[in-house]
Amino acid sequence: MNLVQANAAYFGEKDYQQYELIKGMAAALFLNTVIEPVPTVREPDGLAMSSRNRRLTRQQRALAANLYPCLLNSDSDQAARQALSDLGFTVDYVTSVKCRRFGAVRVGAENNEIRLIDNVGGKQ
Image 1 (tube, rainbow, N blue to C red):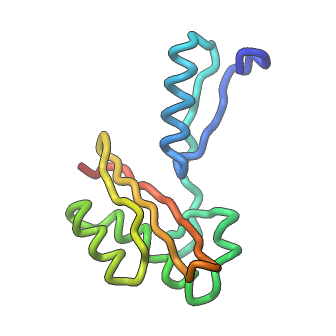
Image 2: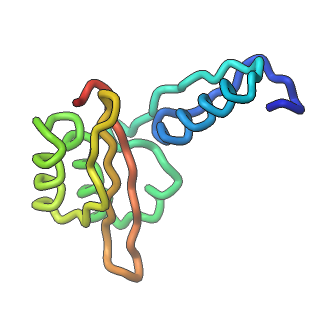
């Protein structure tokens, strides 16, 4: 960014941690580039679009659609973890930071295990 001197750079909220890291780096280095968030693009059933989705089997894809609503609608991180686990996900984490709930899960057997991430705003 320092070399290119862009006025703005756009980062998707799907990888919110990356967005925050780059935003902080730009501020710390006094870059003139404005770091703008771009809302997560979702499939009609709510699954965040990702190149990883193409690797999902039909059954895994049906299961994957439950990640977003579990993060969005659960009353707590623990309730979201439990709901995801009950559905058959291997849960890496569900945690809320600064009113945003983050989740990472795995679907599939070891030889075809796919890790999915997502996050939703407005959670404590």
